[in-house]
Image (tube, rainbow, N blue to C red; front, side):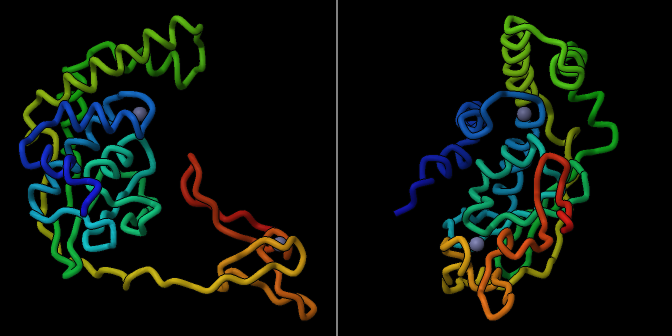
Length: 228
Ligand SMILES: [Zn+2]
Ligand SMILES: [Zn+2]
């Protein structure tokens, strides 16, 4: 029983447009970054010849937290929630997909791929700057931008992938399976917490916010320490 069977079939049959359409359901909009992620994910799956069982048989290591990563999560099935997604905060358009024996492939954007990819959507970037970066927009402009994003994303699928990505075979160290920890109730707020996240304060077991302890946060800026 594999709920991703239809996705695996689409990979097998190189149905990139269908994969893209569905990846958009996860990502919420279509854009060149998502298209790059769908392509990279597809190339990776073809290369390793193994599909995710959702139980860490295949692992993806993404080197950026942006649109690209959603395409990769959708196509590879390696996600934040099933512990098969590793995030290295390098800010690179690259990802590695590997099986549990550590064998895999690193897929990275070629240095001159930017101009090539842009040739498929000449007007997207100036609109991106206006609508997303500078936040100058009306509702009509947002809708026009989304439409342009969709056209751009599907146009990129028609490009020559050899001109976009470099594929390098790698052998990497795979982390052990994600541990499962027992739950403990915080003595202050009464919420259930993973036992490894407890702080003992004055003989009380407290969660991180109740103990007012520092922690790590992953957000649009990458991983950062929230210091207390
Ligand atoms: Zn996007
Ligand atoms: Zn608490």
